[in-house]
Length: 90
Image (tube, rainbow, N blue to C red; front, side):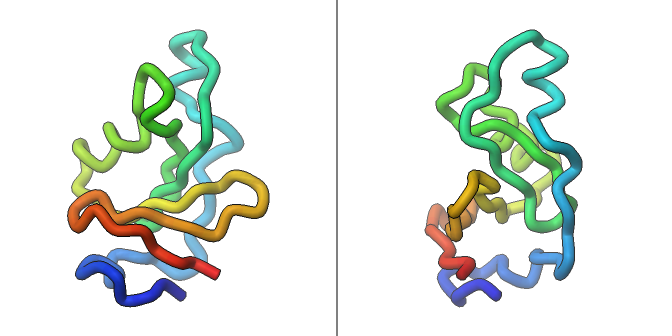
C-alpha cells in the first residue's frame, strides 16, 4: 500500500474507512473545514493545517496515530507526522 518512506507504515489498518464526510470538530465550531485528511489507523476525519482548528494534526497529537492521507477527490498522497515524510498511496 504505502512506500517504505517512514518507519510507521505498520500503523496502517487495511480497509480503514473515514469516520464521516467532514471534520466533525469544524462542523461543531461552525467553521468551514479545508482539505480533509483521514487517519490511516482509525479513520478519523479532520481538517488540514490551513483551517484554524488544524484538527487532523490535533488528532495526531492526541492519539499518536502518525499517518494520514488526503481524502480529497483524486488525491493519492499521505503524510507521516513523526518522520515528516510524504507517502505515495497509489
